[in-house]
Structures are given as C-alpha cells and as structure tokens.
Length: 228
Image (cartoon, rainbow, N blue to C red; front, side, top):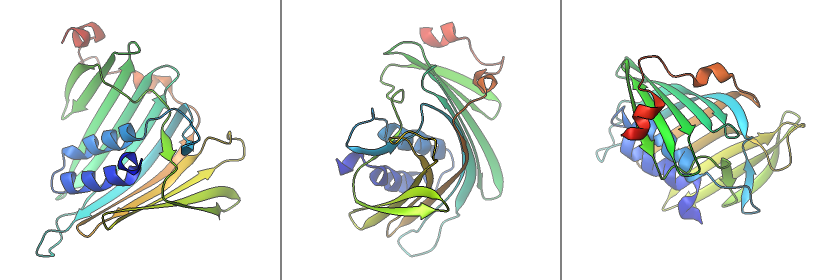
C-alpha cells in the first residue's frame, strides 16, 4: 500500500520539520518505523538484522512567496541489533549556524514492551513504549517503478514513487555475500513543490560495537523507566 511507502513519510516529515530543528530526529524515527515489516514478497529487500551505517542529510522547504527557508543539514549514525533487541541512533544537525546533537537508544524488554532513552543537551530521559513496531526487518516496499542498475560491480535498484505531485527516488545495492532478500540503502531523494529532502548513506557493515548500547550513568535505570 503506497500510503505506507517511504515517500509519503518523507514528504510529510520534510514539511513538518524543515522550519524547526527539534522534529528532525522524530522524522528519522518515523521514516524507519513506517518501513518495519517482516520480509515478504511485497518488499523489494530488507536491511540485515545486525548492521551499522552512517549518513548525511539536507532538507529545504519553500514558503508560499517562493523564498527559501534556512536549510537544515546534518549527519546520523544507526547501530542496530534486531536479534538482541537494541537500537542506537545519533543525529547531529545544523540550523542557523548552531550545531545540535541528539542520541536515542531503544531496548526490547519483551514482545510488547520497549524502553526508549533520549539524550539531548546533556539531559537524559526515558519512557516505556507499548506500541513500538521497530523490532522487525527494515524493508523497502515493492511499489512504484523499479529499474535494475549497477553501482560499480554491485547489483543495484532504482525505485521511483509518485504521490500528489511529489516524487521519491531511492537507490539500493547488494554486496555479493549478502542474501538475496538483503540490501543496503545508498540514497533517498524526495521532492515536492514546497520541499526537498536528500539522505545519503555510507560505511555500511553487518556488525555492531556492543559498547555503544551502554547509556550514560546520568540516565535513569531500566527499572525506573519501566515504572513511568
């Protein structure tokens, strides 16, 4: 269903977050959440169950009088171990010359309970989540126009989706040792009449450093988070 495809999430998030810095991290979480699905024939491919990767992004919105708002750009780092039920996401972004950082950890406590930590401006908060849907594979829905291509010697796919005049273009590729249903996301670009957002990914590896899942000592304990 295209409503659940990547493009629709991208366009909504661009418009909602480009004028304000704080929702950017929420966008990345929403983008990931919308594409969490178990591997099926309705998906083009899925990211590995254990991976680390980095990326950069740039987003710009245009207001009604065609004047461009201040662009927001930055970088992010994803470290994910679905098998162990652990996710860490770091984002650094710049708005009007000011550099901001945000870190989030998610820990799977049970099939229905997740504890989420947020660290920003030196302050650490946590909360219990009961409707968390990010513990299944991160997959690319099989929608839009799919074109086979090559990136160097790697097999690649170009996926183009359109909705209400907006266009989303996504590039994926596979390394030779990867399973047929696995892939990496290389680039995403979403453009509408009022906004654009581009994300580029790099340094993808099918491993994690378990030390990055340790939250700072200043953060509340897991038991404290569960009681909230």
